[in-house]
Amino acid sequence: MGFLSGKKGLIVGIANDQSIAWGCAKHMRAAGAEIAVTYLNEKADRFVRPLAEQVEAAIYEPLNVSKPEEMEAVFKKIEKEWGKLDFVIHAIAFARLEDLHGRVIDCSAEGFAESMDISCHSFLRLAKHAEPLMTDGGSMITLSYYGSEKVIDNYNVMGVAKAALEAGMRYAAAELGPKGISVNAVSPGPLLTRAASGIAHFDDLMKYAIENSPSGKLVTIDDVGQYATFLVSDAARHITGNTLFVDGGLHIKG
Ligand code: NAD
Image (tube, rainbow, N blue to C red):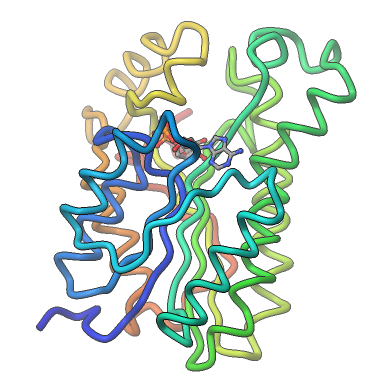
């Protein structure tokens, strides 16, 4: 029996065993939660499936958030299998490389809209689908980064998307609070994942974090996963509307 026993959660964003979402899944499962896992597409399936098996995922469904019918199907399945939901982890982001690697003012309207849709609005869509299933209250977490607040070299359009994501998180927290649903963003320091490898000079960001954070170390997906596990527990019931840093204190220096 762990402190998440009896809780059922949806985790979106596992690409491989380096993913922040995987750090969340394994610690939440270890704490006793039942887990639903999604995978992006057939190509991702062979990497994600063994991980889903490792956490004995009760539900395993494809989900490209750009396909409304897939999101519908995921929540229909959750409703049929579980009839309720206690938490949602949204750990996804996307920007076209030409936008991510260029100036914000050079982004095409289509590329900008796509990165906002996948990286930001998809969180609100998940929240809308999850709300009616969170009959005993619940917790929704998204993943952000300090580039939402400050201009971080090479973070570019993703910084704009994260700023909108954090604002969306706060409005959703206000809207869902009366139903006992908490909504937060967890903001890790840089850690090398597949998404991070798309950011130019990511090595410099990691080096900066080591040299400038009070801890003097990089965070890991386990650090983030353990913190998120606490956040979806009853003990964190009154923590809502925050951007919560897991960055060894880097944000107080940078
Ligand atoms: P990752 O590459 O492991 O995960 C990104 C996920 O986004 C992948 O699983 C991918 O399939 C998914 N995704 C992309 N487009 C999608 C779509 N249309 N539909 C569904 N899923 C889609 O990388 P990660 O670093 O674990 O990223 C998780 C989150 O953490 C992201 O929001 C990222 O911005 C954030 N974050 C990462 C860092 C870091 O340094 N790695 C720091 C702060 C925040």
